[in-house]
Amino acid sequence: MPFADIKGHDLQIGMLQSDLRSQALAGAYLFSGQEGLGKFLAATTFAKAINCLDSEGDACGVCVSCRKIDKREHPDVHLLEPQEGSDALKVEDVRQLQRKVSLRPYEARKNVVLIREAHCLTAEAANALLKTLEEPPEHAVFILTSSKQALLFKTVISRCRIIRFAPLARQALEEIMENDFGIEQPRAHFLGYFSEGRIGYALALRESDLLREKNRIIDEFALSPAGSADTVKEKEDLRVILNVLATWFRDIYMVKTGLPHSELINLDRRDELIGFINRYAWTALDSIMNTISESLFYLERNVNTKLLLLNVRAQICQR
Ligand SMILES: [Zn+2]
Image (cartoon, rainbow, N blue to C red; front, side, top):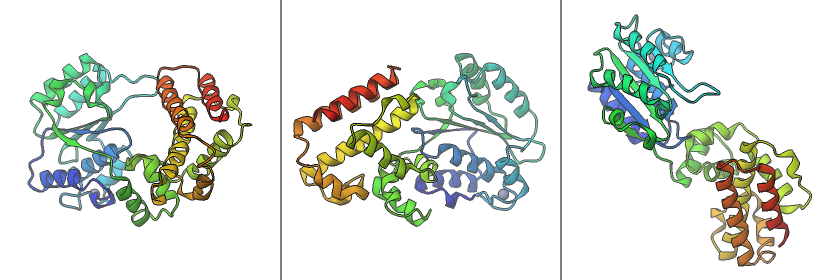
């Protein structure tokens, strides 16, 4: 897919295209910004654009080179990413890559090395990589992506041209979802909020049953005292439940303060929300929302998921 299909990051794409068109590619790039922004998609498209056979400064998506990159079969485009079960990028892997890029490309203009979540490089691996980044081979471009730049070695960062990705404004993301991806309301509205402006995350969720699922969670855990905490075992499931409950109680709070209804996250259930204004006192809403956000905090510290959920439900049901 061409750069034009990457929505919401015009400034960043413009910088890359300017480098491509002026044939002033840096030896190394760092695509930085939180998870779910679409950094890796941008990095892959950049790799394609560098070597595309049909487009100047862009990725056609259909030439032999673009297709090989898509299928991860291109002999000159290499990917290093954390493997399941271990999130360390090891020095042996970096060395292997270095051997590959020291050679001229077989068929591409440039060898491209994509290093995904580069903060996972071990100290040894980062040091080894640094040697190459200090004097990158003419015919190679390194593209690092990282959602945790603070954990990345400063020496590595200093060798890269940094392209910073940021979340979009909620309204902007909602419009992109509707106009460019044909996602209907109220799904686009909810995704815009729920993804907190992270377009990659929103797009990953677009095919999911998220809207139905979030309504199930609201029915089961906020509206009915019957929902069972036993069915929730995975940390990720609880994270979704807590985040959905947070949107629900935040909305009740907002209706109570008289916020315009278009700002509601659960706009699809506006009438029910209005019906709840009198059920919860301000203090009750405060303590429910506090409990939810504390639970999200403890979840990251591996506190038992069932206990956390029981605690939140106890808070909700007391009211
Ligand atoms: Zn192409």
